[in-house]
Length: 299
Image 1 (cartoon, one colour):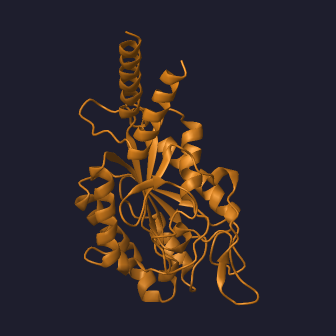
Image 2 (cartoon, helix red, strand yellow):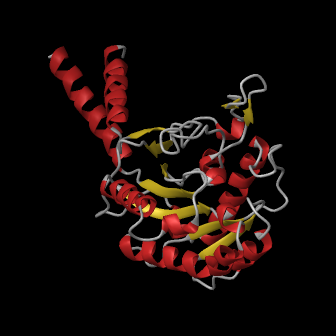
Image 3 (cartoon, rainbow, N blue to C red):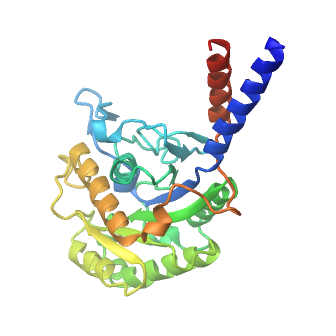
């Protein structure tokens, strides 16, 4: 009789706990662009070797959070931690970017938001031409975003920070706006998300002299649901190109503020609609099962 009672209580506890998990949706946020999105905060050249190294400093605003995941290079959901792009921008030395700061800030300011699924796609040194439809980076972005959706996610936004590589010659700067708009429109079409909110970081620096021309193009796309967050006043690393760690923290918070101001409250509810595919990472289910079992056995 006692064994039956224990099993019944265990079954009920597991049902309740798993039902609670299943009501939490995965809010997909795409991270794309070049090195300042991938993250170079804390990356400096080693004085003895001249090789870029990351100092390993992770600010409190960028610490791991049990409600923040990232899609790895092999398309698996894992707990997010800095550097977010380590296996995506793998040929470069990555440091702190704006992604973790953004996600933590959103969850702090809206505790009912639910689970965040970051989809890192940024690669350092890339021009807007490399993000056009048919190019490798574009197709990888679409593939990774679609995988995130198919595993139980819903697109919430793309955070986009790119353009430094297009400040070198006047032709690229002149054509930048048209190429950027084509990229945004093609991406929305291929993701079947015509109103996908895009939060674009306006350049703080550049590799060439045409920074203002690219900034002007970014500020005036005229596309609906494209919001700009200006990074111009944020501090840079000694290379005068990449944001410092604290600048990346601040940028993530600025992006979070812009996102929360823009998004209607109905899109930040913690509960998924009845027909919504639920996201429950396998290791969370296993951990929850063991927790329930331990609670029953120690009752």
